[in-house]
Length: 389
Image (cartoon, rainbow, N blue to C red):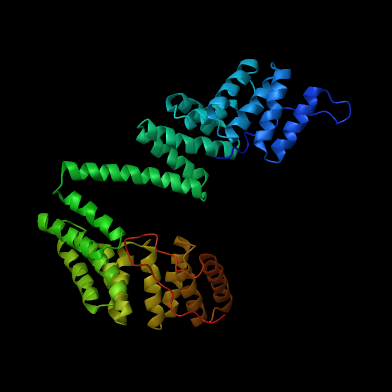
């Protein structure tokens, strides 16, 4: 781990001419630090510490160097020496917490890391303290604190790969432990089979997932959402197998869901999309309209309905529907693409050009992949064949 932000030169060197021995070691040590030659820097600052043992800044700089060299016990010793000489030196509390955490002394590290994470203004120091807090909390079995810190880290550093990996591992470990506890406490419950089905579905083991969710229905035939989940799994398997039987099985499960939950809007959406794919445009339009009437902010249903209006030569209706979709989710490239088509169809050239420009920018940024629906439980709307730009 590289300390960025903590590694600040505490000692300043005098000009080369007329240097004292102490100034010479300070200059050589700083030069080595600047070049990343930490062993050489340590040698020089250790000599400087012998000449000026009462200078807190020298011990603080040595603490940073030891940390860089993964000599954490020495780093702790030098921090404590610096703090005795000058408790007001900046960053030493965070550096001490980081060093103690590396030594596995989590109880002593946590209060210092918490202070660094909550109150340090420097982003990199705060980030490092947060990541070490995850490790310390986990080591101390403080799962709730680890989760809370993970949430805060993701807000502060949403695109940081190391943060994403470590916070994801926290969530994954907690979920794994909870699922293990569920299996131990209630091995034949619907919750265990549902958890196993979700896991198998996530691993794309669709045959196993279908078996798992059928176990759920055996135990509780009227369990809401289970037929819908099976329908989605059959759809996913159809994407792999391209077997008509899987698609028909999906349709059967969506219809079966209505016998348990007549108001399942996601099942209605899936059936509407199936009709749209099969060019049953009147049925698709009625189904999409019913979904949107009940849930006006169902963005993917609005995009689907706009697409059906376009295919049905009802561009005037498509415009308003797709405009609403883009307001609900301004990053949905499919919505912008269809809106551009609709505006062109009603001869609104300026609006069509604007929508097309937005689509092109989003499409280029996405790397050509369709943006997945934010509601992951439903099939996302997809782009049709694109024009050649």
